[in-house]
Image (cartoon, rainbow, N blue to C red; front, side):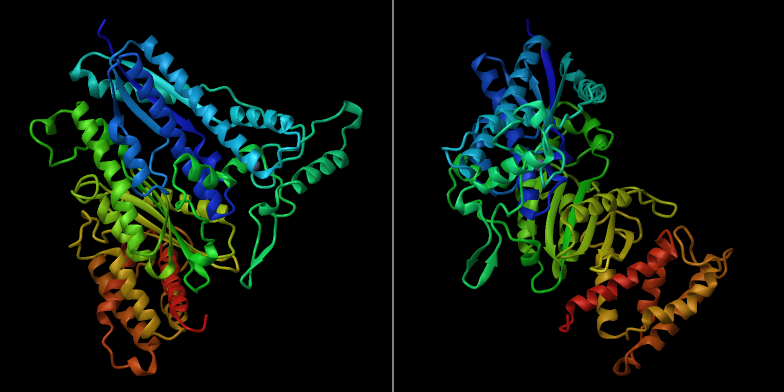
Length: 582
Ligand SMILES: [Zn+2]
């Protein structure tokens, strides 16, 4: 029997691992943990297949069994660089593959439970009775993990494209049909995620002794017994540091595992010098009060996989067929982008990389270099050498947030902005390939706008004439150096009466609706007048007509005048950040 199969295997829930993050460290460890679990599942399948003499090859992500360990441990060891799923080819029948998949599933569960037990032993003294905590932990691991897989028989090389699509559809069907878990909580919940039960050394004694007071008492007792090095606060060299587990915190098994992740990986990856403490958002701001979060995702990845969109530069005749060689090349390029290109760019702009897996990137950056970094990441994605292919596009959500803003809220906002960027539609042209930008101020105000990377809606490259980032940087410079603070008011006085119905989403100023050419000229003249009126004393003689044209150009491609106003206000914000007074 020489049957061939495709196996797709996915580990989740992604949101469950990272959504509850309150600190950068929790966010990093959630992402890293997920990447580590993927690594465990891949290695399990590779090793079992080898032991049974089953030929096996990873299709996505592109990993070479021999150098898998080597590469992942040496290069950018602290970056979560595996997606939460893999696709592999096996020369075996579906029953054999199902057995392997089940074993990989068990290996993932065991790995997470192992991390949990490691954390328990580190945090609590060995003389504390840990049986009940271990029991809770095992239940929580089982309840949290959502592991799905599907197989599809492959009928020869020509069948690859069909089988790949089919196996993904099967996986989606399995996910949709999953049983709904109801978490029955008997005790008090974790102070980090608020979902799972917080670990406690004692279960309920008997039904009639169950009371909130008793449970609370047990919980406080439990966490007060954590070892000294986890307690707070410790004053070091004049700075107050909070402990790794704060007073009043009581964690579930999953959140505790995340909190201790870097200790675990230090040992597990034999890297005593890596996995140092993570900076806080405070340390990331570079002396200002704000920091940036960037979330990027490749557009239309399904079309690249199915071959509807083709990567170029491969040897003929591979270009014409969506076979396994094509898929492996696709995976290799995504892997190179995530493992080499992205970390280098993030480092260059003094950012911090949380996650880069396939086409997905999550990174932090100082406000001052965030725009440049965004541009470099997007350009690399469509670079023949650094990324996928010249025709590839990606959308990004970038949020500038105050250092005291709740991290989970900032992340959620970045995600929704990325989605809005993906639903961007160029007037009369292509969709997606956009940058969603938002500022969340300390007082809770939100300003947001979406712009295509190439303002002309063309293919984005180094030589793009109307580059959104370049235009924005020019605007920031003008607003910072040449205009007075009354610029927005002057703009509002001149333009908003033309809007008639008032400033709201979906409405756009048009002075002469039936003549776009004349409309633009008139708007440019009016904008030039506003800029002259708003120019600072020493800039009164500058010719700002080019800037006026740029602004009106941006206004034309934006969905609404409201977004345009928000964009200008964000420039004012950048100005404040660069100023010395704040
Ligand atoms: Zn928790």
